[in-house]
Amino acid sequence: MFPILFLAVCLILRIQAVYAIADYHERLLLRPLPHNSLLASFNFRSNASSVSFDEQNFRYFPRSLGQILQHAHARELHLRFSLGRWDSENWGARPWNGAREGGTGVEIWAWVEAETAAEANARWLTLTNALSGLFCASLNFIDSTKTIRPEKTFLPEGTHINQSMRNLHLLHGTLPHEVVCTENLTPFLKLLPCKGKAGISSLLDGHKLFDASWQTMAIDVRPVCLSEGCLLEMEQTVDMVLDIDRSKRPHDNPIPRPVPIEQITCDTSKSYSSHDSCYPLRKNVEPSWSLAEVFGRPLKGACPLESGEASSTVCLDVPSERSVHVQTDGSHHESKLNDNTSRCYKLPVGSNLDLVLPEQELAAQPSLAEPPLYASRSIVGHGQERGGVQATIINPTNDTANLVYLESLPWFMKPYLHTLRATVLTPGVLDMTQHAIKETHYRPALNRHRGTHLELLLSIPPASTLTLSYDFDKAILRYTEYPPDANRGFDVAPAVIRLESQSSGQTFLRTTSLLLPLPTPDFSMPYNVIILTSTVMALGFGSIFNILVRRFVGADEVDGRSKLAMKVLAIKHKARLLFGLLMLKIRGKGRKAE
Image (tube, rainbow, N blue to C red; front, side, top):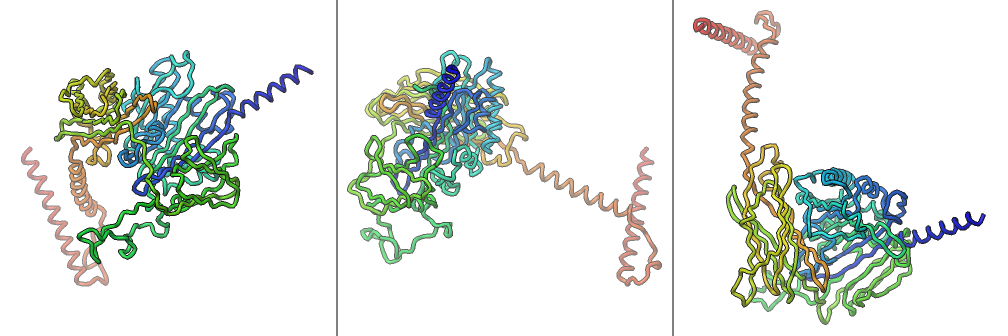
């Protein structure tokens, strides 16, 4: 009896320990930005009680995603859906230091367990095809031509055993042409315990999310080992920058219309200011807004499935003198984060909550954190045969920037590695031939089999600008390989930059995607030939078919016909006779020739 009781007690304690670490948390951070913009950062974290899926414990971790990872032997997964461009000059540093940001379109990388590289590629295709159906995306188009194996750019975020790292293969793929839409948001919400019905996820609406100036959706699955044990953690993140004036526009007035001049405060100091010309006077005040105005709905209370002491919270990163009014029927609790600059509000269960910030003039505008790096990339050159790529990376800090630069190029864009040039421009220094490239990893492309993989280890001096440039050739595709919008061009995936800093740790940046024009044939000529040939065949076939199937009768045998009808019949009869004589004459000439 005692051993049974002992086993029962141990089982209860194990279950309590499991559920102590298998929890679910969510948080929303709101941060006003210059030019009437608002950064909304949603974060959801759910844990599974074990790293292995054999226990089939899917209390908070979604079963649909867990079974896919189990079948594909994926130990760590990172998936990104992004649209727009982060404006570093006006919005400052990126949220999460760019770690939850992806390139334009869809970006995915994962650590897959396999014995050989061929087995890893097969499991990688299984993973992308399964995720394609789960998220209603075109991930199944990530084949070998869009897959690379980065060496230094991405590091595992989870806790992996050293022995298992030997069999883990990192694979990375991108789809820069993918259009992110509501079809991707719906399955994203279904992975959450409350599925967008309660908690901070109730604010996620496709009309607001995809109307933002910049937005990204991220899913990260990684193993984590704590003092209580090891678990599998999934973190879902949604970051977007909303235009407050645009978001506050009511649903019954979707078309933006100019404000009447009587309602605009004009700057009369301008020389051209008159009764019919107005230059708007910029106000040094923070605009008024609320959650219901910006997101179209208030918060629908906390998610009742959330566990642990920490519950659903909404944090405002605003100055301490900024007025905030809380409107709710339930009880709410206000607290501050560790930095004492963000006010957090605990959501009530079963009651709506709305935060209202009235228009207010602040003594000083809040300062934004300066990004540790600026990066841009563009295509240079002209013509349909050759071109070039130029990337500019600016280090505004007083420390040397050591970074990793990664490019994944399509196979029809063939760069010449010997043309790679790195130029460093430092104010006050005339020597621009510094050795900025410390290490190079290059894997050339194979036509229709794999793309180009270029990875550079760079070092930029303080307050300097690095310019990377290289030349490339444009391949000529088969006519079946061109998309329907061939004259638009082909999308090239953004470059990924990982910066190592002692102060801020790892920082990731993505440049904008490129639009590559390729030599395109005139697709209108085949259609013109088809149309002309079809017209000739239709006329010839129609005439012959009409002669063969029509029944000939005498004009005097038809009763009740008018004179006009009789004449028409006579003309047709003569035409048939002439056609018959012509055919006989042609046949006679043919026999003489023989």
